[in-house]
Image (tube, rainbow, N blue to C red; front, side):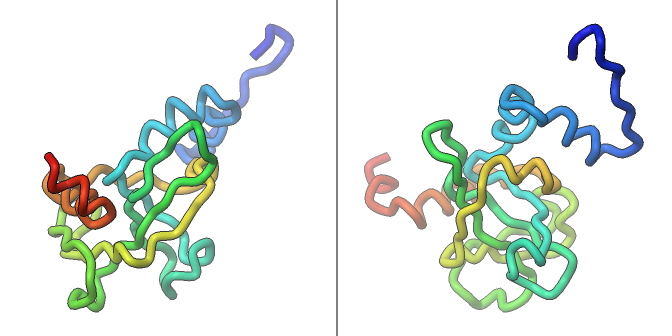
Length: 144
């Protein structure tokens, strides 16, 4: 902000995040740093066409890299828990009140910068992140 600009005021956290992520430095600090394997975000259903509710949690399965503009995420659902995927317990991360299933076969690309418009939920436990890693890279997980 230059000395000639007035400071902008905001009344909610979502607007504050948009102001903080107006430039690449803000995106790096407040958005891209939470696009790691196992980070969980609320993404609106109208954006994903995944469900018929307001939004679903999506798990980052292809993390952010400055070398590409997309990240990959897979939806988490509390329905059809018999499908193939990784079970996540209720409360992991907090704000997810029911046991769920990350549908790893349904991963989709998203522009990393678009996550400034989504809500960050938290991070999955390390044991679940390892299961996700093994699903996508089975040959390399045996070498560890």
